[in-house]
Image (cartoon, rainbow over the protein chains, first blue to last red):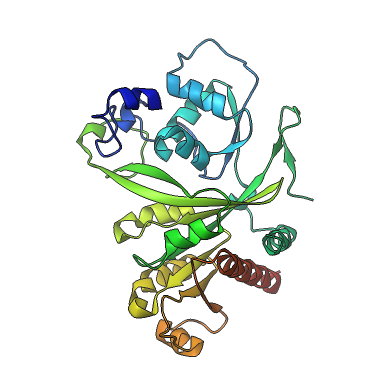
Length: 127
Length: 195
């Protein structure tokens, strides 16, 4: 919900919960079709290649706007104030429409590379 | 470095690699404190709203399931342009174990926070990571002056001898950072031992 809307209606706040039930945004779908997105997978909007098929909701547009720079799924959820699972369903729609690209973390399917671990230690030491 | 990936469309966007570290422990052990002290962003919270049943593609019966809200803390540390570390504070309640499975999938490792006043609170986390084979270290959050020897804590937790235990103050950024270094070095040692 946009902040200006919240400001005009002070009877709506975080305590009151969402005005629209979370899964109403996804037409009741609770998981994306045909894929799983890791919480730290990166999403990048692809230059528009609309197939013209799918009607987009405001939340779909918000995701595209937010992902011109690579953004992790979990950050996207926090930024848009949407539940992670809701974001996943919407990402599934966008990926099928060819509007975003998704990059799963390599660690999800292979052990951590020793050079990466060393880079992490050095990076942490430099903080 | 091998970790560099680029956009498949070749439009020059570099896609960083994100690594996950879990911060677990009993209620009030300092998970949120640790995530906030070491994160470069104000820790964000995201809500995972969950239906009571397993995740399915079916929309049938969705309206009948009760929804639960779980708030997860997460923080970020940018190691380099290509490498980011995400810290996730695991939701404390046992009934959210299934969410742990998702968090633990592909995780680099975990820090189990122990509070010596309520040491037993971290048993479930330790059991979980042991069973899953996720590398973890135990970090004793020092709330007060009542210190116990590391050996005594290790015995009380029945840890295998190679699992590192460190004492730290979760409020101090550098102390929290050192705990993460300890974990990553431990993961690297394990990796080299099995290679």
